[in-house]
Image (cartoon, rainbow, N blue to C red; front, side, top):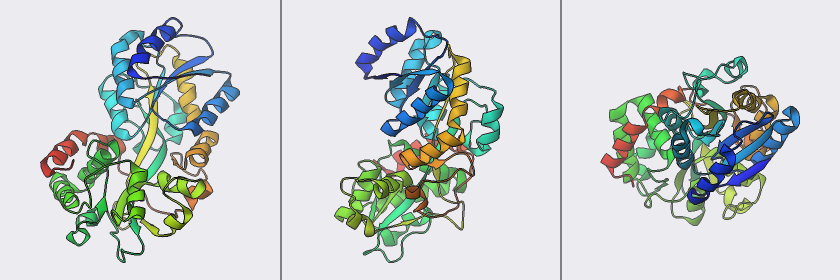
Length: 341
């Protein structure tokens, strides 16, 4: 497998090398913003099973989408693989994906985890849940709406409004509760911030450990990873003081975001691209999303890794994520209105 990790400067050099032989029988060209080393197993297993070599370029999702737009009909890309519904929808809106027909994907991927026009499909999920300090919070919020309760003033850590996880969560609140309620929720949450929004999901968990905040929101796989392997700032003793809540179990259910992909609009190796997406929906690949990166499989009935199963059973929000992604512009407007940095 040829792996090319790009920056904006290097991208121009690599593009020439790719474009001279974009089509090659037995190959597929993957643009990926998934940055997990554990995905190497997915790629090697696919090649072993099919004989198809994967040529991969890694980069920031927005940069990859912009690159595919700039390359146009000459793009060597066969597949875009990225994280979060909003980015998948952004790629669709940019015209860099195409609709495909696959009975396998239609049968295995739930309707709520795929684009209405079959331009993208979700292959793994993460629940975005509430974590809290068990020593300081006797009654943690049991749903997303309660995070805005004034009794939690000065206790909550969260990521910035520019982060896609923040954008998609607010978009889901809009879809489930309406724009007016979502605006009130966002304002209440800003009022409850313990610090200015900053850092990644692991930093929100570390904020609880350091005492900067008592409540935070993070995707499950960051905490599950700390159960499975060493993560700086989240030792076994630290984790023992962190509790978690799968929100809205008596309401809409826990918000899910996903990792997924689609076939590039001008894919030179179309058949191989579809085969790769179908492979990602196989039991083998689905199990590895859980075992290798502590995610939830998209395909129902696939077993969980011990680290993920340790978080417990819950009811997910089954709202159509394609519809949720349509609310991102409204979510950004609300962020600006309430001063969510």
